[in-house]
Amino acid sequence: MELEKQGYINQFLTEKAKQINEVITEYLPNNEVPPILKESMEYSLLAGGKRIRPILAMVTYESFGKDGNEIIPIAINLELLHTYSLIHDDLPAMDNDDYRRGKLTNHKVFGEALAILTGDALLTHAFGNMAKYLREFKQLSPDIRLQIIEEFAQYSGAAGMVGGQVLDTLGEQGKSTFEDLIYVHTHKTGDLLVFSIRLGALLAGANETQIAKLTEFGRKIGLAFQIQDDILDVIGDSKKLGKMVGSDQNNRKITYPFFKGIDESKLEVGRLIKEAKQLIQDIGIQTEHLYEIADFMVFRDK
Amino acid sequence: MELEKQGYINQFLTEKAKQINEVITEYLPNNEVPPILKESMEYSLLAGGKRIRPILAMVTYESFGKDGNEIIPIAINLELLHTYSLIHDDLPAMDNDDYRRGKLTNHKVFGEALAILTGDALLTHAFGNMAKYLREFKQLSPDIRLQIIEEFAQYSGAAGMVGGQVLDTLGEQGKSTFEDLIYVHTHKTGDLLVFSIRLGALLAGANETQIAKLTEFGRKIGLAFQIQDDILDVIGDSKKLGKMVGSDQNNRKITYPFFKGIDESKLEVGRLIKEAKQLIQDIGIQTEHLYEIADFMVFRDK
Image (cartoon, rainbow over all chains, first blue to last red; front, side):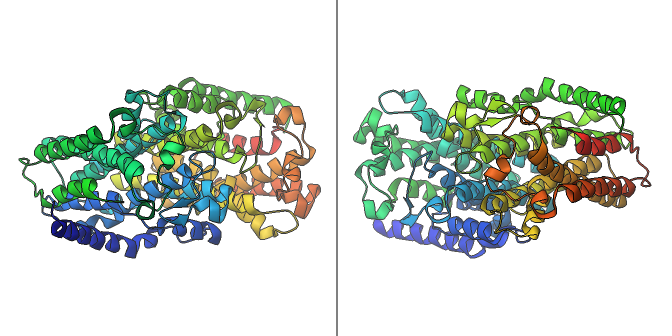
């Protein structure tokens, strides 16, 4: 991909991320929340990030010829949930990280107890706020609206993101198998990316084939994203990543290059993105922006 | 209340709790969950407890002449959520408790990282499972079903239970005000009890007046329950409570007797229960079992 094109993609994603950042704190609960809890929730929500999950939902929704802005209040809950998972991951009992994206982690600023509770509050609110705006989304059947909440929990819970985090936390290099690694990558990061795409498709009224293909597309770009993350961790630039390079290795986390080597890992990323694009080329949607996000996941440097 | 009557109440509640215990783990996610996470979720779910929240929902539902068993799959999520809150409360960064109900707390058995993630998994699943069974509860309008999920998050989140826990964790005796105490009692324990009653009423198709009165009933018995807990902590029997007597004082937690004294606290419990009962005496529901639960909250010794 030429640099010119990459610049455009970054601009397109930056534009969408800006839109999200402008409104995200408006969706936090307002009444009766202890001020220090509100402050802590806002601190982590506004600590940066690519907003790739709500963007994926919006871009998928737009691929059906619709206006992505309509679903911001629903898509934003993906970011609330993602933010809770980062706060809990960074805790001393877990990854014990002092910095994320160049800023102090939540527990370094607000203390461990409040960090745990801030995560709990964001997680809870993600579901409440999701239900609130799905109530107003009357063009969808009640069944699909409740299915969306059920799926949100499946992809982010014990059989999804949390399950992946459990294996990642318990796993150690040299002891874990390649299968463990794939489980972690599939669930810890992949599941919420897949659900983000499904959310956009379900809200757009996609048919079963479209949903199945888009899910598979999400699986592949999710895995590519995670392998790329592993690669960047090994070869990346500390400043750009905003965290210590090699921190995964220091923490003895299992990574894709550990099993397959850097070169094979890079090839695998390329293969996955190509296969992902093929999956959605003939299902009657506008693929341009989805392709661009897929590319971004490979060519990003942070 | 005579002992005979108290024996009956305990039997009635024990019977309902047994019903719940027999099925509760059937509602956990089955596929793709790391076995150690499943084990940890089951450990805490089956570590005892009065199951007062699902029982309140069932008894409220029954007060409208309906069969409480119909809503077990929905009411059970109150216990999933309550269990997550206990696991996180017990963590070293929070109350740092080694025992609960005479058993080792989750993090003492499974370690801190897994305890945090087990709480996250239970919390997430409570919402997913709620949505799953509300999908099947088609006698209610979609609007009310989504409202139930929204309320579940409100009462258990930043403006509810989690908010109460934040003030409780940050508060210290001698620094906190009586208003702080009431905020903690209203939200940390009261909110989920109130929501349990609202859940039963909403599922039964209660009218607005009935819901408003039952909510107020829940507020009052919730506060009575919490004041009674404070009283038992001061005068209770360590063995019956299954935790160190005076542990709240040792942890410098604020309590009702700290501000009002034991005698006035006891009088307040009696007043609240009496007022609670009056609120629901003329709203066209069968009050007998709700009255009994209200009494149980005063006369219980653990």
